Image (cartoon, rainbow, N blue to C red; front, side, top):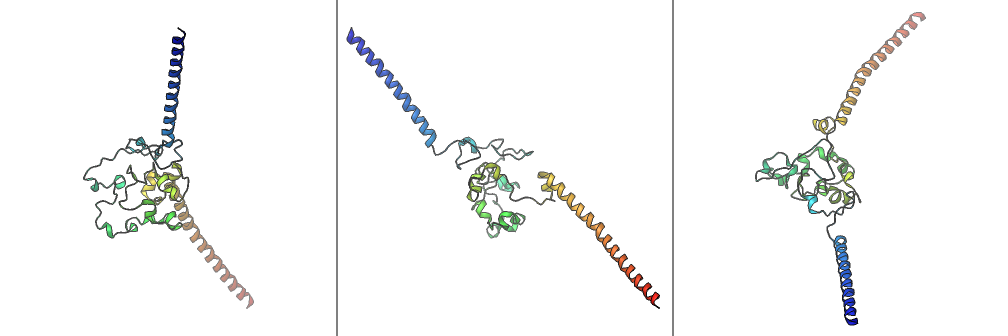
Length: 233
């Protein structure tokens, strides 16, 4: 009877140890898989390694993390005739279908974009940000210029530790007096035109005013000299 009780106790102890060991091993394996995985989930979306989970890059109705206030765009339908679509921001090759493209330079079509601060002060070229051929549109979901990964793939090349909010800076800002600025930046648009009208109005008033005042003083000096000459005689 004593032997049976002893064997039963040993079996219970062995089972308990086995259960504890299995739980410990599974916990370590799960932790190792989470930590050592080459693709990690965002712990803080402002700091990115450049690797993304599947749910972060699949097309969705709303872009994660970064959105333009007041602008909501749907999914662009891809088709064999996509090259004929004028909105090229969504194409895998945004220059697809352009005649004689191999003989063109960037500034031949994008002259205004060459006047930004990166080009004029930092002496950067278009390829350093937009990459080589084919150049995907900035709204294409797997483009390095897409807002969901631009900070990690493009901005971080020069600006170490750049975040999503940092990458939201508009490099190719539109002409402040254009219709594009009126649609996307109304405050800039109306401020620009107010200051322009104020400048033109001020100059239109004070330039003739200054000319007339100077002319009057000149005539008064001539009249004074003439009167002094008459008094001398």
